[in-house]
Length: 399
Image 1 (cartoon, rainbow, N blue to C red):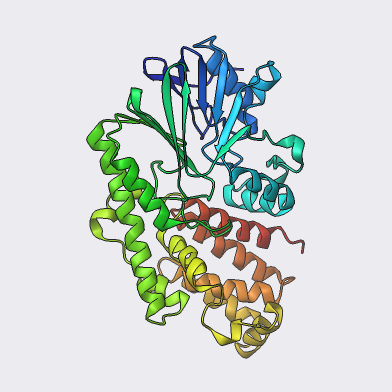
Image 2 (image 1 turned 30 degrees about the vertical axis):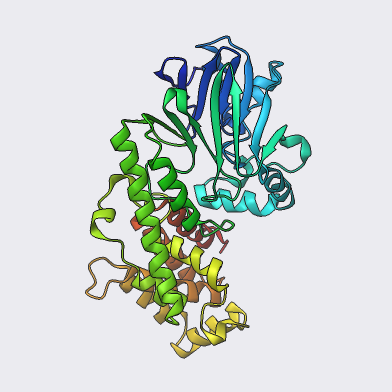
């Protein structure tokens, strides 16, 4: 198995990049400190990468949070007989227990999000699948290892169990998922609550550190005090403008859809390379905030206790004269050359048709084509995953 990239960013300080997720490795006089451990499928690659540069014993592993791509790749070290101390925020433990309870849902959601076969998603299902923390903390913790201090700070952001790690003697910040080179993952449509306001506060705190090296949980490491400060400063501003606009809309009595439609990212933030909506997008962050502050009801009375979707879509399709005209109109709206091209509206019509007549081959073909086009036009990975899954589902139904 080839050794994955491992880069020494400073003396005895490495970033390990076995796949799309990173780990940070610090060699001290007492042993190694590993910040994050990757995903289960990365375990052997992380172990081989670290052992290609140092034979120092693994002393401590810090989980920046309990996501499966950060806290489940330690098996390479454990299988080699190493028994490091595991440190994490106290909320990692209930997260792990929730993961075991919702394994079926999370398997399906992650398969949809990343456009993969559910059979390839190794989701933990019982206690033996987790590496449980030996030491947890609540707000902050300083670890002294090999004469060096590692400052652990808790903040809510993408998760409620997140930790960022400041190593002042090396002017190095390991931030987990608090920064990577896309807009903040703070609105995922298929996942539990995210916390944009607390994330912005954490970004301000990290901007103020004067870090010279940033080791993120994803994407390339960053260097330079001014550059790193800028990355966190614009991130905080981006999140706060979404928070402010969303709360203004809620307080004005706007519906969820009206709030999202009115959302506008200032031009200087929309142009920031590190804030592009390639993973999450601002509309999703706004809906996440609406859920946090305003509940799940969308403001439309009929949707409070709605009729079953097959019933109301069948009624609409019947009023339109049947499946054929609905499908025809959806295809026109999806055509980029049409003067009234509207891919979002085309998706509604295609979904109505296939929901009302799930066995109709034209309705299925239309839904597959329209949602496939929507996925192709969508910048965010989360949107691509959901639209792509809808296209595949429509196209896979047997005639």
